[in-house]
Image 1 (cartoon, rainbow, N blue to C red):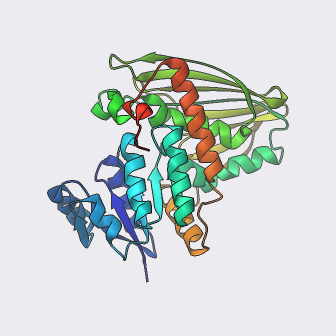
Image 2 (cartoon, rainbow, N blue to C red):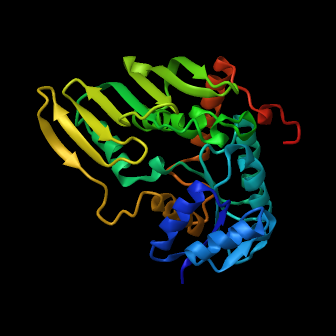
Length: 330
């Protein structure tokens, strides 16, 4: 018996997930939903999905679906996830979890009240190679870790969704969240002070930003993202006996450990059977559901809320406002 996964939305990231699930043993693309029946049918035909729904409500009401992956814009995550939770359907919601922290709070309270599993699909949190990075640092592979730098930039400013405030656009929630996540996984949450600046698009959303975090024990993280250019996507963690380099921080491709003389001490790669990295969050969700858990240890609800509040604080400082921020119907 395969685990039956439903996909809510038919955009770019939905295609990536459908392709991933099609390659996973013990899992199947069981259903897809769009607001357009034609789009749902086209998507279903491409991935041989047996059930195509022209409404999100129909997907949420399907009794066979075990987990719904939400792949809509950030601005719709709250409403889409709430619909699923009200139908008692477990949810794997694409990052950013919601447009703001208040939406996240309301959603997590509702899921807890109804006893429904929900988590955020920020794939880096679930990846074995990124978890190996955390292990190496914690075990002293580079001595005492003092500084960290991470960046992720792509030329994506031409994507309409990313410059529209009503869709919670901007660099921060789409790619800036990855350097922040990298720092959070390695250095934790003891941020004592943040100095952050951004430049904005003509529509008022953040286009590129530099964030410097000052943490306990005199540690410092310098983070950068932009949707105007392509960066090397590296993460570098420096300690008093060496440093560690991660190639591609949102989906690590190789990790190298060096000593203070720049001599490489070790090299690590993703598991040989890794499909593309999306599979781990799906497996973690199903494992938690089977154990009767309402959250996964890879991305606990408390961490979802902390991250959303931190993102809110950055937007507030920059004056980046979404229509979702003034909702009165939560």
